[in-house]
Amino acid sequence: MAEDRPARGGGGQGRSGGGNRDRTGGRDGRRGPRRRSAQTPSQRTREADPARTVAFRVLRQVDTDEAFANLVLPRALRSASLSGRDAAFATELTYGTLRMRGLYDAVVAQAAGRPVAEIDGPVRTVLRLGVHQLLGMRVPDHAAVSATVGLARQQVSQGAGGFVNAVLRRVSSQDRDAWVASLVEGLEDPLARLALEHSHPEWVVRALRASLVAARGAAPEDSVADSGELARFLSAHNTPGPLTLVARPGLGAEEELEAGGARPAGIAPTAWELPQGDPGALAAVREGRAAVQDAGSQLLTIALAQAPLPELAERSEQRWLDLCAGPGGKAGLLAALAAQQGARLRANEVSEHRAELLRHTLVGPVHAGARVDVTVGDGRDVGAEEPDTYDRVLVDAPCTGLGALRRRPEARWRRSPQDLGTLGPLQRALLDSALTAVRPGGLVAYATCSPHLAETELVVKDVLKRRPDVEPVDVRPLLRDRSGAPVPDTGDGPWAQLWPHRHGTDGMFVALLRRAARSLD
Image (cartoon, rainbow, N blue to C red; front, side, top):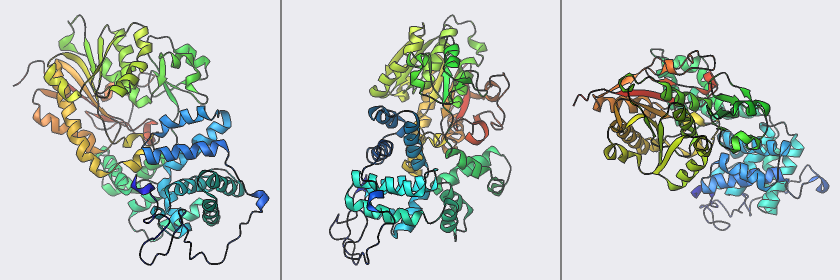
């Protein structure tokens, strides 16, 4: 990525009038009097501990390779043989630094006296890790500075250690509240203040406010910010979500999950929460009878599977389709539910690599008798290739992922408003294809892990305008918790929006659409 390259000229010429810069962000010719560390040489850490090293390497992969932390970190922990408190420390250090990157970059810029873009990428990563320990964790200041300086010396250079030491000493002079107060001073726009304080890009904050305004109906826009709900929403993105598992129905995982320390979650009938421990240590998870899956994802999958099909009640065997199935979380639950109803599931994925992940995810249901066909193909073509074929179709459309920022915090820094221009046509094309592929009388569920209006109800409304043979079905009564009661506060219908700060789930959107029993064309 361009931002990870050294400042223009590398270690040589910088901008006109800027002097020569070293790769750590220091100025070779303009250092002035030497600043001595408050630590004695014997106190200074020469090498980084394994937990901080893991966090650094994972963040570098996220920055330079556009990797996802939730995929890279578990492998890194295993490779370093970290477990227990060390693994928990590395996990919090990694995710906390990613979540609060926007705020921490502003702190670093002020403490270093220059924009973070002028600091070399690896050093910038080290500084972010150090700032999180100082402002976001209960690590003593001296330990945070010493260990992070050691990390810089080990992973970057000795010179980097000196620069990191100087910056972090300035950061440690104030606590988090004081830094936030200093940084937001002079910002008159309340959304800009919220964006900085809660470490979100400002465009994301504005989009999320618009979603809340729409959810409140006729409420004035200002009431959303004034009520504090927007701040609670943003804060929920910076709070780690529970480790939620799905017990795939009919596969006998429930007793094993309980014996392994998991407890039933109230939000969904198939959801379980694991307070601590590695889910991979549970046999039910290893064998695919249970899996890690957000409760909101479970709710919408169950809603599609259990929605009545009165026009197709006489069919001896139903055919279901997951149009964009990789990596397979919803497909795994759909497969188990299909087996209970005697239906056959086609799980389609455009990427061969993700299709392979899908096959692995579906092992448990398939071994238990679920009939599943995994195919590789472009979901936009399925409608034309197989019109009027399926009884139930799930469109889990590619999206910005703004509803899952607590689990994938890097998405907030990778996405931009321009992504909506690419994703919108794709989402509409996939939904239109699904509506052609479903039988008259059948159902299509359109879902996104985003509350952004441009990815949710606007997509559905646009497609409905072009499809007089389709009508929306109120999905809210089908979203039921473990007690069987409808999940509250999901909107005015007919579609539903789940919220992290209201429901404790990812920000999932779902609309249920029925193809008319007889085409109106």
